[in-house]
Length: 161
Length: 161
Image (cartoon, rainbow over all chains, first blue to last red; front, side, top):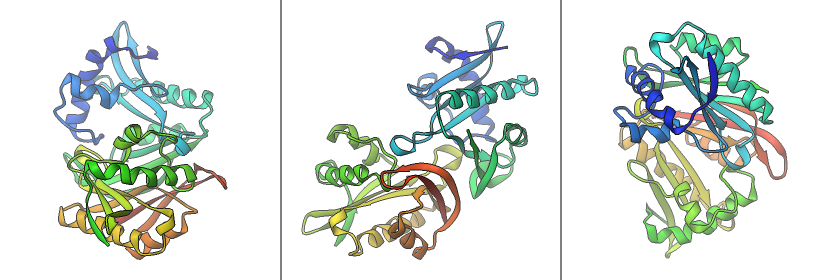
């Protein structure tokens, strides 16, 4: 598995993962039913942020985006988002993307990394972020409308770099 | 003092407040040195969010914007931002805008209102939000580069509606 920066030609191969992950309704508060073009700016970043893909023999297994969490006087704290093809989960793709994002931010001098909205029932993500050194700072109550569980909390998570 | 929805003709009168508040570097993590046109999309909202102005005899004393904190499965929680002309602070403009935003969200069925980044040294804002029923859920450490104090925390605040 290789992780590299995504280019515009990768987007049609990332988009099906974006669609299925969003429409499962269990992990992301993105708009639903977005077309290829509508979804593009929600995932494909512009500098100083970047989008990357995890690929194996030219097949996209997952993707991540990372960059400053805020502009201006908040731009020294990074954030990141991750999606793994559901059929390829449990094979280390998330771990590889998570490690990549943390190293990306650390080498660029970010002081910390903040996740603004981790769904509290997303056990695999939580397990991974805790393993990478993130802690739950708080849980915003009922902030996510889960397709199965209804209104549940969103964690704010943080790791100092 | 009247609070009403802002229109495009109000923006040139809001912009000087936006500029001075951002450039004080004490309350907002917006990009600095934005032109009139560059700053517009950072403050003037599009539906379902709105931007309002507090005016007195046609003079803009302050402005606020309010809308969903996230799209999709997070869109039932509102957020809002507020700016008051520094020379007009302490005259109830912030309180009036805060009350307006909370009522705006409540009447539209939002379940709660979340502030994502309240600078921990912004005493007047903190006093006001607590008076309106907001609580500090957590403080992200060193997340704001204050022009006077350096790296300080950003509060995540929340009020159930």
